Image (cartoon, rainbow, N blue to C red; front, side, top):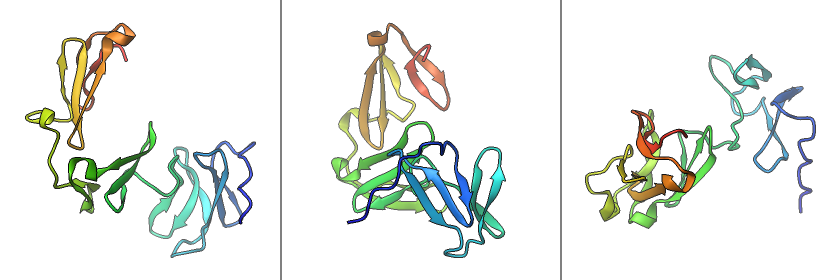
Length: 170
């Protein structure tokens, strides 16, 4: 077997070690990427937001996410959809739960669940959801979700066009 990667220690942000990009993965272990592979032209400082990354010539640089190589664009592993949420990290969802499959939607949107039968409770409801008393209800990938805002002493309300309905004051 291979020895586990060392813990991150003083590695807080990504850095270059020659042409090797190093960053701290989700398991608090040092991850590496050789920035001379697959058309990349070396490790360099990108900008304040990303720090260091692999330079791609004229293309967008590769920069590590808190999800390793998985990005917001997502990927499929059989019927499993995986994507990186900048705040929540790596999210995995089994599209087969709703009888669907995982597929590439298009080059702009990325991967998502397709086909299958959405949860009957989702009929007529979108991702923005609604309030049912103090309970926020919404559908995500065709699966009904809810959260009782009363548990944290808050009312349910419309937050904004991006978040939809949720606990007011969150």
